[in-house]
Each structure stands twice: as C-alpha cells, then as structure tokens.
Amino acid sequence: RRGTPLALSDLVAEVTGATPVFEAEQICALFEGDVEAVRELLALVVGDLPTYMRKLAASAASGDLASAARDAHRIKGTVLNVGAAALAELCEATEQAARQGSADLAPLIERMRIETDVLLAALTAWDRTLSGATVRESQRL
Image (cartoon, rainbow, N blue to C red):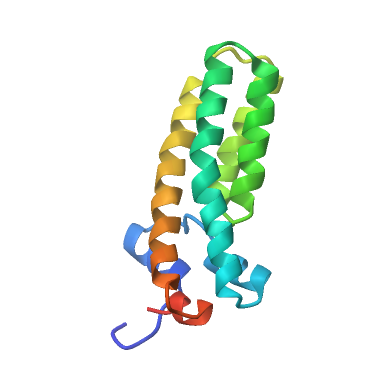
C-alpha cells in the first residue's frame, strides 16, 4: 500500500485488525472541517471522560445502581459524540445491568476502563496531528 493514502479508520483497522476506536470521519463531518471545533470536542471528551468513569466506579462500588445507570448513560452519550461504538456498547450493557439490579458491575466497568484508556490515547494522538493541520490532512497518512 505504499504511496496510497489511508483514512485514519483504515489505518487503525489495518494495524490492530480491529474496528476503529473512534470515527474521525464522523467527527469531521459533524464540524464541516472546522479544526478548532473538532479540537474543542476532543478536549471536552478527553477532559470529562476520566471524571465520568471515576464517578461510575464509585457509584457501583457504593451499590448505588440508579446512579451507576445514569453515569453509564452519560458516558455512552459522550463517547457516541466521537463515534466510539464499541465503548458505547459496553456503556449500554453496563447501564442495562445496573437498571436490572446487577450487583456485580465490576467486570463491565473494568472493560469500559480499558476501552476508555485506549480511546483517550487515540483521541489525544489525533489531537496532536490536528495542531497546524486541516481536518482533511489529518485524516490521511
């Protein structure tokens, strides 16, 4: 593939053999090429997501399942803004488990934590590529 530009999502899939962690194209379309708006969204997600995850873990640890369900729902909404479908699915599963009264959310929350760490690293790396570039340029490697 030397010399052929790859979309970011294609590169992620090629390197990891997995689906993309987030959808750069979705974010770019949402903001119609406005790099600063994209970077603002990334900053919000990267800044808020760790706090939301800590709150979810605390709610679950204290047995407050109603709050855990709301926390998982908030995280789902946040990650859907960047097209993180796999993490959103885990959020949905956690939310539903909490609503159904499951006392052991720890395995789901641990999987969410791992996916969140991967997402945060990917978004942070992409944000670095946006510095001084247009969105379209940052999508191509």
